[in-house]
Image (cartoon, rainbow, N blue to C red; front, side, top):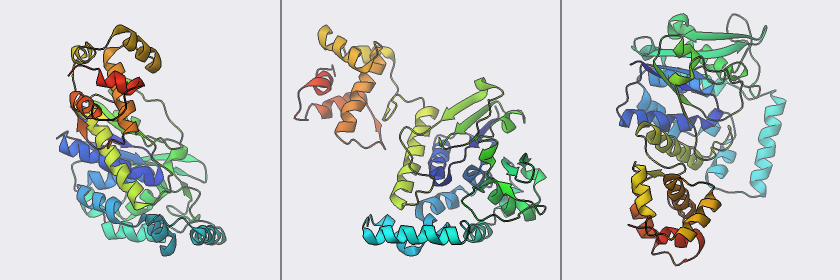
Length: 347
């Protein structure tokens, strides 16, 4: 079976995709090709090149705000949660500088791409790689796989795929201007389907972009954030690192077919959840069914557990057993509503 990954666009939300691919590696799921739009094209190129460790280190440790051209002072204040009047002034100064310059410069992005030198490995890799961008002059989309991209133009095409209007306009390829691929195809999964792939995993950052219908929905598996990822320009290190973790656990849930929506639970059959409800009286069960809008035992138990787990600040970054969560909740000094319902479950 030929498997591929399609990375959507989404700016600095792209950290989520790095965590997602780490889950593929840890779950030993072989991937034969990668395509991407915008930041997804950069992530796809690095993954296809076998440079994942460097990619992970880049997202986890680099100051991405500085790469985008924001001042060191603003980046440091953001990372240190110094939300004061001085920070507000710094934000206004940065905005003023961007307006005067007619957009954010791509100089630092180009330097980083030159530093990575992705082409040295990409063109010798047995993994497919593709991207999409839009030529501004005639608004014509360009879908390209690596064999169609000259090695000396790779960085230009990567920047072209990522080129949002926030950047300073510049001619890049063939004396033309280009726009972010999301202006035509936010998730270029069809390009892998057309190449004969049997299954394509879509890592959707839920950002703004034009979505194209999938040519074969049966071959598409969508993985999307279980919680909000934040702004596409959120360069705060702690937020980026949390998005990496979210991407990892959300993807692991899909690949391992774990239970849960916001949290992850070891996979169990319907009979197990019906067993957990065995000791709950019918009246209480009916009340909770109405409250959570489901009569299915599995969905009911998971919704109730996730409700109290959120209230009690359980970490999202773990794999739980339902019975262990119930036992922990029994130590909580609350004995009403959903708490009482969970405590009465049979373990």
